[in-house]
Length: 58
Image (cartoon, rainbow, N blue to C red; front, side, top):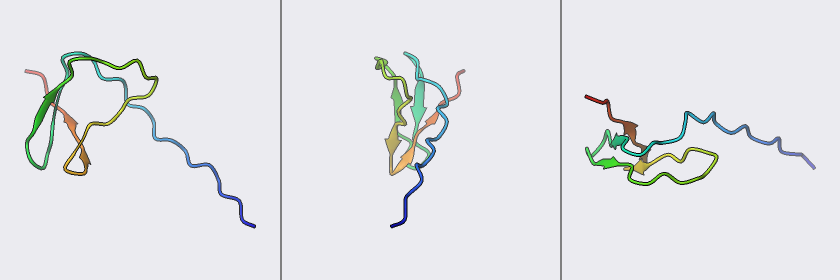
């Protein structure tokens, strides 16, 4: 029987911070982080089946 190798997890890019803004490249929806969870890993914000990108600060 073949043994599967454990898949490597993607590197965490960093945790979100309160006030950070994200935008969807497909539909243009924007969200702002109001409350940060206490998780050790960063969670991607998904919209239109793609991760949202961090909005540039002005």
